[in-house]
Image (cartoon, rainbow, N blue to C red):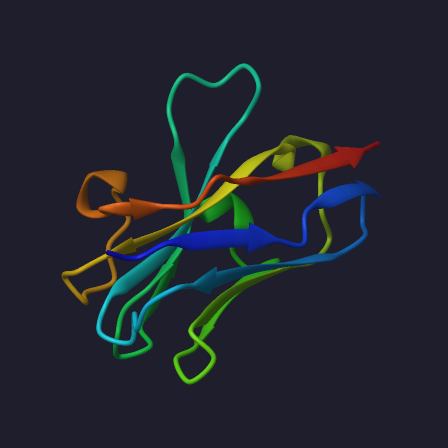
Length: 123
């Protein structure tokens, strides 16, 4: 069983940066890890960025060049560096882990989820 706890959310002005962290209770070095978000008006959870156990990464088009996902297996922590934030990035951000190990975009491959951390970007 893996438990995930996100932190680092907050309210910022457009153009500013935030760094999200996700601390895992168990070893997730061989897991697929990802960040997802759900906006207040959104019906589905969107994939933001994912990272495989080999370090391969993938991003949704709207965050490419602005967000960076990384993982520190020794610290059992996943990160999401978010730069040049935009109002449309406003959402609840969730960390997730899946046992496959590959770099996977879809939330259906992820078994474990955190409770989320809110990111609000003002224009």
